[in-house]
Image (cartoon, rainbow, N blue to C red; front, side, top):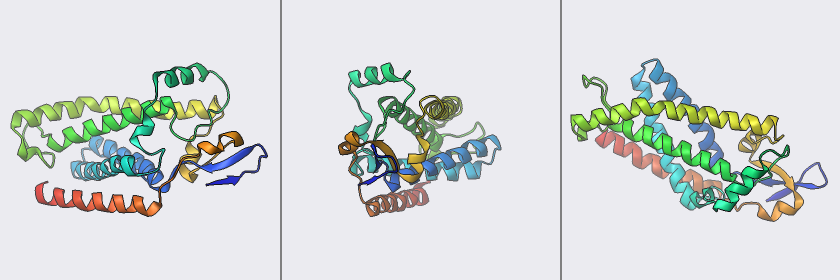
Length: 229
């Protein structure tokens, strides 16, 4: 879908579907709660928040297989030449006008998702030395395995925080230096691009499909946590 913007040589296109935008901001909010609750040693909230993020990430993976064209996991993979060309153009003080994740942006998405998956997986099986604080599935593994997961969970968090800080810094770089507001499209879903790029506008999936994916994943995972966690 495209609509004419106020500028005569640009076209406003929808670049991000609603399910992806909801996922993005919910993930940001819940990750903040997860980090703060751990710092405050509110582990009940920490574990509950972690379970919610698990549901979000599984929903994102499924949406990456069934959702909009630029939400697909395959859209995060580029050819080596694409990365080199994009890096070469980074010093230019003008927007990149992408209608999806840029090559560098895709690497950031992959890195953050992998970091969160690592953090959450280890958290599910982690336990403290006394066994007073345990992840939902710590009961199903040996004490040694649980302590190993806990060690990774505690040491890996600094990498997750570093990636989040880098992600924020990159958005500030694009906003200030490249004059490219990447945050607004993730709120409104729309972006102004040159008219000759309009044919590259992504195919967006229906919102009801995203709601269905989230509902099914949430129902399954709540059942799993109630039965086994």
